[in-house]
Length: 130
Image (cartoon, rainbow, N blue to C red; front, side):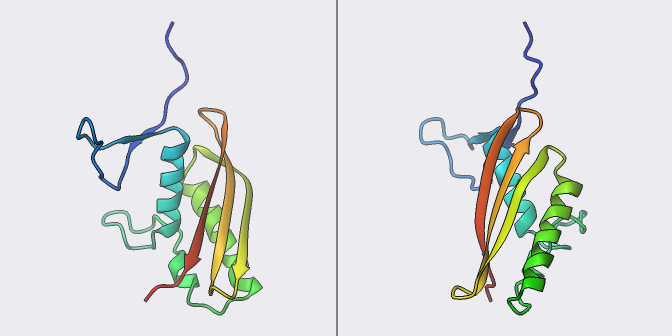
């Protein structure tokens, strides 16, 4: 019997070799999609050669004053980027939480992966770096 569910796989971009085989590890299923989402969120426009429009361009918003308007803009940018560039994902919930003491935003994204019927969560902290 052939498995009709298509598996998701991607290279681990840390390029740390596997201790036994020496090969670059492969991320599978939810971990591969999480890595893809994180890369999309942290990529700015014009950073990728030959694909200048890919990315959420959130870094630009981090230099705006911390306010509900900036928080909403980050949330909207994340949603639009996922809908446009990551068709495997359906957003369940997205929260962008202002952290004025750390001068940044905590992003928590819960999503479902269509191909494997799995729910996963990715969270990261956005802060401006000089």
